[in-house]
Every structure is written in C-alpha cells, then in structure tokens.
Image (cartoon, rainbow, N blue to C red; front, side, top):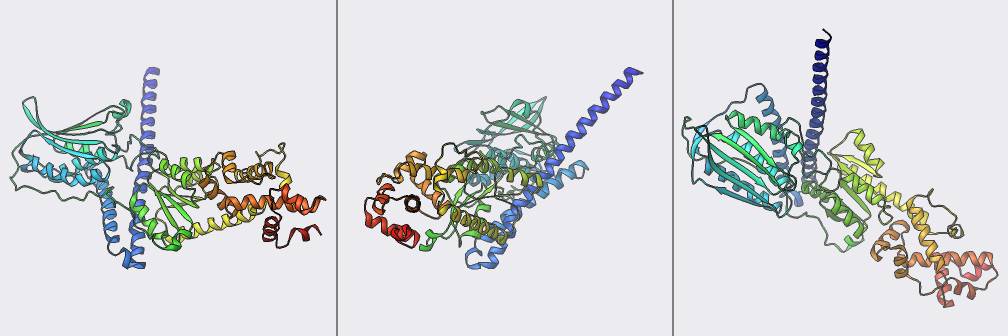
Length: 538
C-alpha cells in the first residue's frame, strides 16, 4: 500500500509540474499575442489620425500601411481560431486535385520581394516539372507561408533560403517532399525537440529577431497531420535549419484548374525609406531625436508625429541605436524594448552608464504594458515609458517635459560659481550623479590649465577621452553653451573669485586665468557679468 501511495504521489506531482508548465506557457502566449496585437494597432490608429490631420501627405501612403497591419491582425486571429477548430475537430481538409508544383511556385514568387527586402535570396528548386495530386490549397498555403516566413525571419542579411520540391517513397507510398532550408542562426538540439510544442518559442528573449506567439509551428504540424502527412525539423546552431514536410500523393479528389494562391505577405514587408521633412533651413535648429525601432512602420508613424518639431535620426536595432547615440549624442531618444541584438533595456542601461550619453532623456516605447516591464525599464534609467498604442499628443507632451527638465539642468550647470569646491582631490564623487561628476571633471581640468592661454577644446577632449563632436553635444545639452564658451565661462568665474578675494590687479588676474590681452579680458568679463572687472573690485 505504501508503494502504491508513493507511485500515486509521484504521478500527481508529475501532473502538477506539467500543469504549471502549461500555465506558464499559456501566460507567455497571451503576453506575446497582446504584444503582437498592440504593434499593428499602433499603426492603424496612428496613421488614421495622420490621414485625417494631414491628408495631403498621408492619404496616398497611409491606407496601405493600415491595410497591411490589418492583414497582420487578421492573420493572428485566424491562427488562434484555426488552433481552436483543430482542437474541436471542426477543421477539415478540403482536397482538390491539381498541379501542386505550379501552386508551390506561385507561393515562392509571392515571397521573393519579402526576402529581398530582408537582404536575402530565396531559391525555388524542384526535381519535378509538374505533379498532379490531392491537396488542400488553403492549408498548404498556410503551411508553406509559416515555414518560409520563419526561414526569412531568422536568417541574417546576405543569407539564403532554399525552397526545394521533390518526391519520396516509403513503404510503397509516394510522398510529396517539401523542404525549406535556411542559412540562419539554427536551433540547439535540446530546443529542437520542443519546437512543435504549443506556445513554445525557441527564443523568448527581448532581443529576438521579429515577434511571435509560439503557436505557428504547432498549427503547421496540425495542418500537415490533417492532410495525413508529417513534418520534421533538422538543425544545429550556426548551421541553419531545414524543415521537411511529407504529404501522401493520392489522386481521388475532383480535378480543378491551376489555382493561384490568394495571399498578402505583409508580416514584415516595410517601406524602403522613412519619409519625413528635412529640407527646411530651420530644421537644423530643432532638437535631435534618435528613434530606435526595428519595425519600420512604427518608425514611419513616429516620423509622422515628430517631423515638424524635431530633427530625426533612425536606428533599426539596439546595438545600432547605441552606436548612433555615441556618435551623434542626440537630444532625446525614443526606443522600442523588444529588438534584435540588444533590447531597449540594454540600450538604456548602456547609454545611462556612459558619461558621453548619460544625460540624454530616453523614452521606452513598447507593446509590453505590464507593471513589471515598466518598473524594469525605469530601473534601467528610462526617463519615461509609453505603451503601444499611444496617442501622439501624449508622446509630444512627454518629449516636451523631458526637454524642460533639460533646460532646468542647463540653468544648474551653466554658471559654475562655486569653483574652489571642485578642485579638492579628497572630495569623493560617488555621492554625486554622473552629470555632476562630469561637469566637475571639466571644471577641474580647465582649472589645472587655467593660466595657459592656449588650452582649448582639443586639450580638453584629450584629457576626457571624448571626441570633439561628442563633447560639444554633451556640454551643449548640459549647459546650453558651446565647449569653447563654457571653458571661457570657467575662466571668467575664477577671475571674478580672484577679484573678490585677492589683492591682485586686473591685469594680473587676467594673466592668471589665461587672458594675455587685457582688452579681451575686460570685454568678455563685461559680457559675462554685465559690468567691467574694475567695478567688481570696488
């Protein structure tokens, strides 16, 4: 009896583990599906508003973006409904007899431009000129579409997708053999075992390329089984993946003319370039916003929202965003969270930890609207967190608020009046924020060289280890002044202190702070403080 009870206990515990695992996968599925819904909804609602407000600019392009993203939503909904129908045995195979090779060729042609847009080559290879057999056009279309889409999604630029058609025979039964092979990232052996499991995703990180729900391959397998076939996967990390579909060749269904598949490959088909205004002379005076977003439709919508108010730069993944931020040092950054290479959290953490870019306000823009995601983003240093779909006005208000905070920061750093306090080596900088430490470092370096009239921008850049352009943007953002003007301000502030606390004459003080021309010293001093140095001495 004890042994029997132990056995039952083990069975119950195993069932409990399976249920917990299923619950976790379902939770991840609902999170992912809501994510995928929010992105096209952002485009649909946002572009509808743009067409209404700016019909002359968006009436031609906007409806196409809306239709494309509506197709994405419909595709997602159909996947969920099909999976439910399969569970309840409501989905049936509707077989017709026709040339399946020509049908598959038409499908591959529909994917050619999609592959090219992603920098890939799609090759249609067949050992059969034609093959009449029974097949369900709709189910076969969904199977092949899923396999080709996955191959393109997970293959890096300059890669290849091989769509191969052949015939095989097993146990005196002829099969149509469909092979989709890519030169992509591949799948680890331990994960390959689960790729057909419901809600399972090989890569469930926030840096995966593209999005997903974890039901695509499950549905594909069920559709293959519905036509009495089977599907296999072969893969190894770094060597790509091959998906094999075997469908029995029969000739029992009614014959039909050649069928042309009705399809829209729109899951990631995006415009080649992002349209935004940049030909106005006043454009160069606007604040620079870096948009880091891997979905070009979302980037296009953001351009439509911001183009009248900001200079715009774009990056398509987190690593590119980090590199661009280091190079340009923009005034503001808007970044998606889920992106290839590095996600928005990593981007935020990297830029906020580097003194070259730590001052830049960052808005994380994502379809993950749960509280944990918001808290995670804010912990990484994000200044604001907006969930998709968002209102244009909300985004504009957030950006303006962040610029206002920066203006207040400029007031704080523009006039370094308490210079003596920053020169003591004994002062720890650990209790200051990174901006205070950076400004104090600049003031300290200038003070160490304050009597050298030739000390300038190049010397300061070398001392800080920062490029000239990066330093200019950083100091301009923090103080509202150019680098050369800020160096001069530090010299003049020290001159004012010396005038108020020493008996040195005006000429001596001018030499002391690096001005060897008394006329230049007096003029710059008057511009800075509204009075000549002689009046300060009185």
